[in-house]
Length: 219
Image (cartoon, rainbow, N blue to C red; front, top):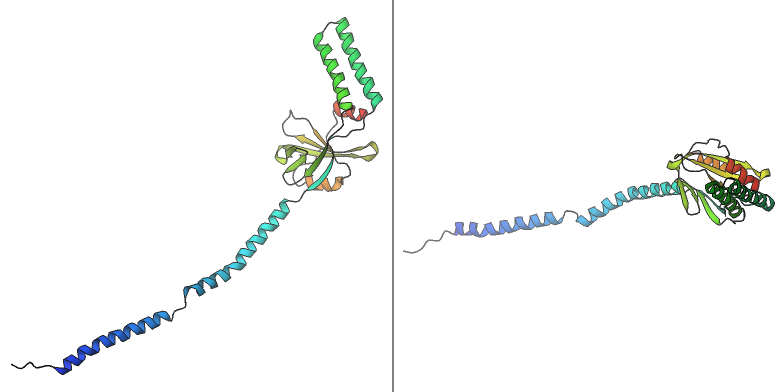
């Protein structure tokens, strides 16, 4: 039998691949029309740049504030010895030590007065070192020693230029720690006082017997 070919169905089968390929190309063109990712990322970076700049500027202001301090250099302690007074006191202490040993034969008391005489002579003729001083937001630095505000109970500025007294006195919270005296040399006491008032209280410090004696001797 002769094979009958339906030309209508054959034409429809040939037309189907063409329509599918056309729709694929159309979808590909639509996908390619969307904006590329690098452009969107660039827009986001440009929007974030002002925020980053603002954060850096605020940090710089904070650092500048924390670095505020008052610095100077000078001797570690006041030194204007009166040689005659020092020698008289030292000789007197040595004499007392000798008399105690002769009449009481108390070796401990004898050594005590003898050591006092040696200390007076040593401090009287010892020259102070030149050191750097700094009053900052963390505490007071004198040479290699750092006194933090958390350990300081109070401060007092003794300023009597006619008596050659220009010093900053620090009292500590621990009862067994001695007062620390820091020479102010030519520094403005009002400026240092206003700076310290932001961190520690101001309380007048009474001079001890040792302070009075050292000032009389100029050591």
